[in-house]
Length: 162
Image (tube, rainbow, N blue to C red; front, top):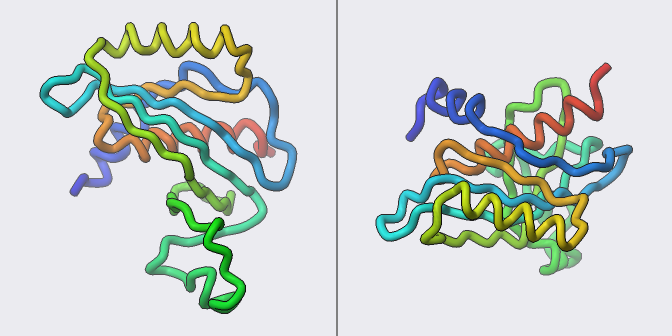
């Protein structure tokens, strides 16, 4: 288990290389990302995490142990199985209650350096004219959700600064 200082160090050392070129206005938004970091697997150099985070600045979903789940609030009979997904419940967004849900998570280990993979990913995004996917470098791929938190926090700060 990481100490709060170790988590903060990962958070601060995370680099956002590329961000979406559109703004969040209101409502529910999908933020696709690719997060790269040195692999903790022996035979690989890079860990690549691809995912999509749905962010809503209008609602607060707390981690499971702090609040009731969907079925407890709305009842078991109307729970749609398609709504199931992984939930990142971060507590670090002070004064900005957000719901963050991540689906379509894909983790791969690559036998090429982070720099080479980053270059390939940037070329891929440029060829596809992708303006929505973000590119994030994490200092510790085992704890990539901390780097995703940094990414979301940066977006929220830019969009909702007063």
